Length: 269
Image (cartoon, rainbow, N blue to C red):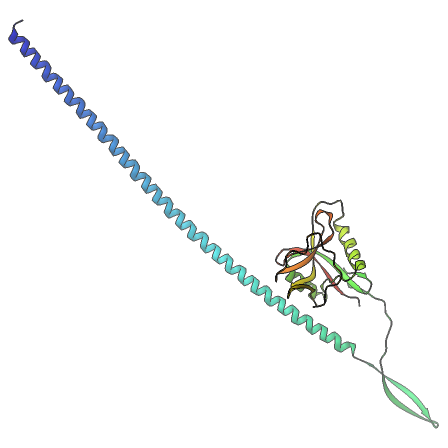
């Protein structure tokens, strides 16, 4: 083969190599461009998804907040209604007490004949008749000495418990002696015996005010039966209760909004 032919073949091979390299580079550029477009699409899709999620979360938060506000308003209305009912009960209870006091002052008018010098003159005198009658308690109440008690196994707050007691002509219990305390503990143990692990709590009429505990009727607290470490609440919302927790059957204190059982007390009839 002549030198001219060799040059021609080499030139053709060189041209083919250049074309092949150009094609490969073009394919590489197409691949890079495709990958770049995919990444851009992925980034855009991800951004759109995040944006949609943010909007959904924002709308859900608004909805939840509206429901919370409605619920808060309902709670406020219910508390206001309960306060009104308690005030009405207090007013009614005071009216009943005044009526009972007025009735106790009533006298029995009797006519007593007096004979003077064969002339019978009737003089009307006013006498107070006292009739002995047995000491009784209303249905459901249990008597101890001259008082009647009832254990209510319907959980509620301290204020509501006191209102319910007053509806029955009673009040939350005031415990003034060891004997009275033992009597009530015996009643509680009938429902919550010492071998029962479930703890129970019973509101009584003691409340914390002006730096000390007093009974609901304002009388001083004398006898106490606090658990170890009690009382430990000591603020304006604290009220006292009897607890069976850990077989204690002693007294404790806590916030008045807790829902506990309660004990009502009134004078025997």
